[in-house]
Length: 360
Image (cartoon, rainbow, N blue to C red; front, side, top):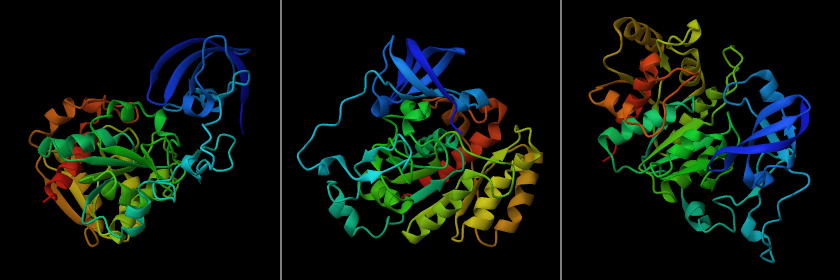
């Protein structure tokens, strides 16, 4: 349940696109808080704030903030009234929660893209890279741009992790490197809003004119340590959506030699569940050359049962390490940097390189 606190903003710290960090004092002492100005307004020192402190109390990693729910004494103004309210959209996300936003869906009647998407039936063979962690996004992008620096790459953010795209400092740092971000399902805050992964893929192709699209959940995934209890298994459904729409699915494998948990070493059980049990359509599964021999052996053994449905592809890695080190945002997964889990980031970059090779 929600753990509530009331506090006062002492100072405004760093900010990025769609989010701002605050220092807040409460009856429990000082707290680090995060506000989304598009939802609650822009906090200033001295403002009283209502906070949800559950994630902070639990000590969560990416989500370890007190979250500003409202500035009760200085509420933001309503959006401008255009007389019809049609221009504001009717797509409701985070539905029936206290902070549900009402947005303009990319394919709804008031959207300038309505006619294009109403007529669209295919993504025209577009390569789509699916990944189960948000941290794979910049590495996949680096692999694509290593060989095709001018390729237009869209990011489709699913709602398995963060709902607001504004939470992601990675996305903030990749602005200008991506053709755009589409938030789907209950997720929101992207350049375009879509109700489903299918609509999001069509928008990536026909609105953002992407050559390649990357599909992954936002930061802050949910996992219970069981076979099915991980929000990222939904990437298997994304593979199915790509195939239904005439795209080319490319599965970024979660490979690790740095994760201390046995179930994630070699090929993570999450990847094996998503591609081996959820994905009914065939995908290309790139494996990078040059892995540590013991890791390579474990990867080959784990992927053998999947080879009847999917195509395991070996990818040369020349130049990929340099591309990863030149990435415009820091690389980190579960607190591990590039050199602490090199195989993970190399596998993601290899998936990007393979997707780039599919472009004609």
